[in-house]
Length: 461
Image (tube, rainbow, N blue to C red; front, side, top):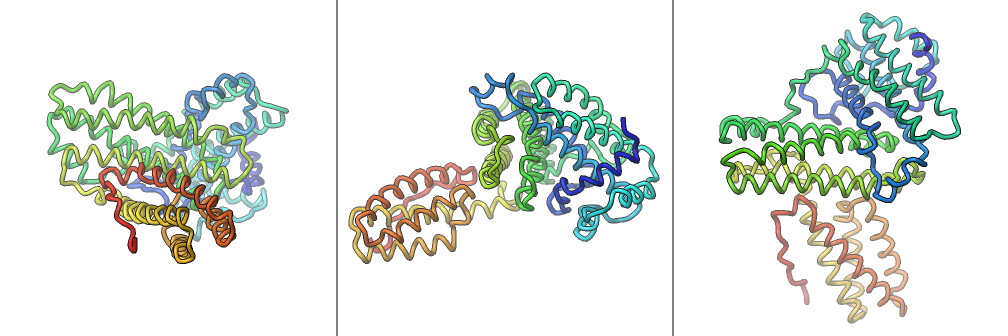
C-alpha cells in the first residue's frame, strides 16, 4: 500500500486524465456539499458498475461474458476514482472558504496543471481534517490497485469480480465516512417540488398511498439528478465512457423503483382505477425504457472508439431515460390532480414540448413536399422544397437528436446535387421513407403523449 503523500503526488501527475469540473448549475442540489453529493453518487455508481446485471449487454452478448476483456471497464473504474480524488482534494482545499470547485473561477484553478510536489504541498498544507486525508488515501489505494491490473494484457471475468470484491468495502467505507456524513444529508427529498410534496401529504388518500407516491416521486427525482451528471458530460464535451457507471446506477435504482411500484404501491387496498392504471403503466414504461437503453442503445459502448458514435449513443440513452422519468412524474401527478401543469414541474418540459410540436409540424410539411416532388418533379415544386429544406436546416433541424442531423443534411446535399438529373426521383423516394420513419420516432416523444397531431393540409396544394 502506498503512503498518503505518495498517492497525492501520484494522482497529481494524472490530473490530465480527469474530466473538467462540473459547475454548480449543472446539478440540482438543495443543500449539503456539492462535492459530497457527487462523491456519494460516484461511489454508488461504482458499486452498481460491478454488478453484471446492470451492464448494457444484449442477450447474445451475455453468452460471451466469460470471454469478455474487462480492461475498458477497469479504466472507467480508475477514472472514476481519480475524479473522486480530485473532488476530495478540492473539499480539503476549500473547506474553510465559501467557494467550491463548482464555481467557475475556482474550477479552472483547481484543474490547472500542477507539478506533483506543488499539489501534494497544497493538499498537505490545507488538511485540517485527518478523515478527509484518509479518504483521499483510500481512493488512492483503489487507483493503485486498478493501475497495477491494467498492466496485464487483459482483464478476465474472475479478475473483474476480484477487483469488485476488493473495492466494495472501500466504496462502502467512503460513502459512510465521517466527512461525507457531515456534508451530505441522506434525508433530502431530492428536489421534489413543493407542489408534489403538498399533493402527497394533503391531497392523496389513503395515507399509505400518499407515502408510497412520495417515495416514487423521490425515486424519480433522484434518478433525474443522476442523469444531470450525464447531461453535463454531454454539454461540456467530457469523456463520455466515464458516464457508464452513472447509467448502471440508474438501471439498478430504476429497476428497484419499478419493483417497489409493482410489489407495494399497486397492492394498496381501495386504489382508484385511474391511479392503479397510471402506476401500472409507469411500472411498464420504466422496464421498457431500461430495455431500450441497456439491450440496444448502450450495448458495446465501453469498447467503441469513434467519438461521434459514442456521443450519439449516450445522448440517445440520456434522452430516452430523462423523458420517460419526467413523463412518468407528470402522469402520476396529473392522475392525482388533473389540473396540474406539467411545465410547473420541469422548467425544460415546456421548451421541449414547443420544440417537438414545431419539429413534428415541419417534418410533416417536408414529407408532403418531398412526396409531391417525387410524383411531379417540376421546377416550381423542387424550388419550394429547396427553400423549405433551407429553413428547416436553420430552424427545427436542431431539435432532432444528434444522430439524425447528419442523415438529414446528407439527404439535403443529395437533393441539391441531383435536382436536375434523373436520380432526383430516386433520392426523393429514399428521403420519403426516411422522413416517415423519423416522423414516427418524433411522434413517440413523451412530451407529445397528450398532444395528438391533426395532419393539416399543405398550403398552396
